[in-house]
Length: 637
Ligand code: ACM
Image (cartoon, rainbow, N blue to C red; front, side, top):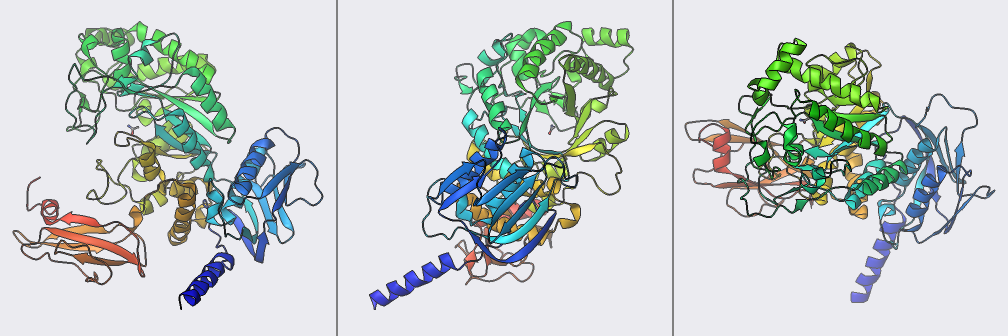
């Protein structure tokens, strides 16, 4: 009996492993795809034919690793191989349709042919090709029992936008060089080509500037705190300031090279004039404010008051002084070294959320206003940005900054990164500035992905389906100025790389499809079905991701002086919701949600779980009834 069960088990597993036809789940969705019938199976000795162009080594190295490590197969690369498994070809005559980054991929029973105008196109084609194989192709170890086959398909593909970015804030929390490299590896899977590194902020200065050593001797270090950033107790004088870190110039060169070998540009951000506390602590003479020499690098304690909206009121002056010539000398020194380290054409100079309250009462600023005929603090910041742009241009680079840089009048040639919605970006494009869209509404991946009862608490939410609606250029906006879009991962509440991955995926897939795929090819249900398959791929790659899209959405209404109704829904179709009010863990044998619930009089907790058929797809969501009453306005916060 035992033997028979075992035999059946083996038969079942073998069948499951060997008869599966891989579904096609390419993210971002290609421009055009024709599916054939049947499968291409990888031979155990794989030959890649590729011309000897040096940059092609990037593509052949990538393919060699993916096709050999998990499979255990042998991969050989040759410039001429009549019986090649995979042929990489650079078009002799440029194919205008696919442009610089596009490719054509043909998977037939006889072999694989990948064509492009440029090596970067072949790299993106190789990413697509890998996505045609079973999820285990992403593994860093050999995997047994998989049939390494891909469906027959013809694909023509190219990006909608040239700027496909992810912003990684390595200032709020420091991430090591190895972690940044891993972040790059993950982003290229989804055809991102730009990593915007937030290198400076109130909490740390992360790049060695040889002419200004205190920036990293002092500015890179604060006190380790855990909990809810922004509410931490002020550090005590005796608490060790040993939390943080920075990249040496050698580290930066290594990162730039690593990124370049994956067709990724790195955009450095040096944030000025606001968010500059780490700078001021290192060089207090750059502040307008007396007593700045007593400041400390922020460790998450409150330094700005947002209760009156933007710009915030600074509680300590975290701005560089626009009326101090030393500030421009400082900017010149920093930007000289930054420009030498990063080959990308732009330098990001921040410009967001600069509080003006200290400037308003400063005599030096008042004198500057008189001298320059500046009427408002916004114009003072405009003066600062224009001088900064001259410095950036003098280093052979172009300036890009957050959309606040427009407010005081922007000089021609500066580019705008629109974060406070799309409006600023649209206006900047109309004024003739290049624009990158990264609006909080769709692309702030530091925001919570589900209800605050289950997510790390931060002040706003962005669910996956909303991120998927991101359209950097709505039909109503006719311009050639929008270069593309990006998702921004601020890291106030991101303490480690696993959480950075959790916040980035799958929303990074949604944004990738928004910046690469044609608008008419986007479809939420199709995207989410693909995303579920990509969860398996990320599992194989051991990359963390959020399953928050399966989490329930709670909507509460007040029904009496002390009673509420709670409606539950999901952003994903086809899920069943089960719940309990008795504090036990619901499963699919518990009451199934069919309509708004009224918590029993003495209930303290609503526990909710979602299922797809018989499979629990999400963690437990625990919603205190007290919290529901607070949301309904019955109880005070
Ligand atoms: C920003 O999020 N303050 C650019």
